Image (tube, rainbow, N blue to C red; front, side, top):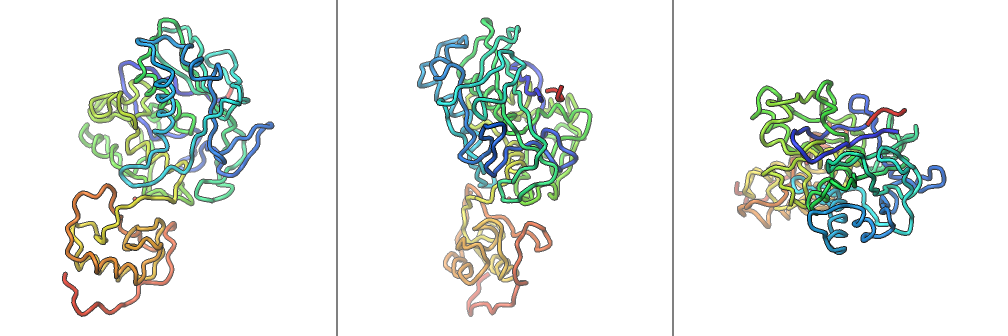
Length: 406
C-alpha cells in the first residue's frame, strides 16, 4: 500500500508533475483503460471511475465534518462534483480533452478500514471517507495500491511496459472536531487528493532527486522557474509511448529559487494546494499547465478542440506563409484533427485544407482560445506520416500541442 497526499492547508509550497513508481519516464501507476476485474471488483476506466461516499449520501457525508458555515446539501454536492470535474476539464491551453471520466456510485457502499492511514481495496474504485487523524489540521490522505500487471493506455497502447494497474483508492479527509472547513477549502483539498487517486504524486518528492517531469525547467533563478514551470508540455507527450517523449526529469529545489518561488502555484502542492493570488481558493478549475500536461502523460488523449482558422503557421494572419505550410505537409496524416494545416479537420492534409485556407485568405486572427500547432516533423514517432509532401501548383493568385508498501 502506498500512502500519499498528507496534504494540508497551511504555509509552505511544493509543486506537481511527479508520478508514482516510475523509472525515468517509463512505468507509473495508472488506471487501466481496458476493462479489468481485481478480486471481484471492477477496476478500470471503463464506464468511468466510480466513486462513493461514506454514509451513503451527500447529506450524511457532509455531516461527518465541522464547518465554518454549514453548507446546504445541494452546495456540498456541487462542491464534491466540481472537485472531480476539474480533472476532466478540457485543457484551455492545448484543447486536449480528458481521456477518462468519473461516475457517482452511491449504490456501492464504501469499504473503509476505520483508520485515517488505512486502505480497504473493496468498495467503489474511489471511496471518499472521513476519519479523525488526531490532529486539528484540515488535511487529507490518499491511500492506494496496485497489482503488478501492465495496463492499456487510453491511447490504445496495450500492455504498456513498466506500468502497474491501480487496484483501488481511499481518499480520507480529517474530521477532527477542531478541523473546520469552508466549502471552498474542502473542494480544493478534495481536488488535490483526486489528483493522487489518478496517479499524480506530490512534487516535493522531487526536491532531492530528479522526479519532476518537464520539458525545460530552469532553476537558476526565481523568474526562470516561474517561466519554465508554468508553460504547457502536453503536446510534447507521445500519446502511444509517453516515455518516448522529449521530456526530462528534474530536481525542484526547496525554497526560493525553487518550490517557493512567486508564481509557482500548482494544485499538487502538498502544503498550500497552490492557493495564491494567481490560483485563488475560489478557482473551480485549479489545475495549471503542469497538471494538465501530467494528465496527458498518464492518460494520453487523442481528442482535441482547436480554433481552426486557416492561420496554419500561427502568425496572426491567413497569408501566403500558411499556403507554404499546407504545401510542405500535403499528404501527411495528423495526430489530432485540425492540427497543423488540417483546416477542414479531416485528419489529413489534402485539397480540402487548401480550399479552407483560400476562403479565409487575408483574415486577421484575434486571440483564438486554442490555436492549431505546427505539424510535427515526420521523424516524430507519434506523427502518423503518410506520403511525403508533394509539389502542388499554387493558384493563379496567391497573395502572400505515502509511503512505500509495508
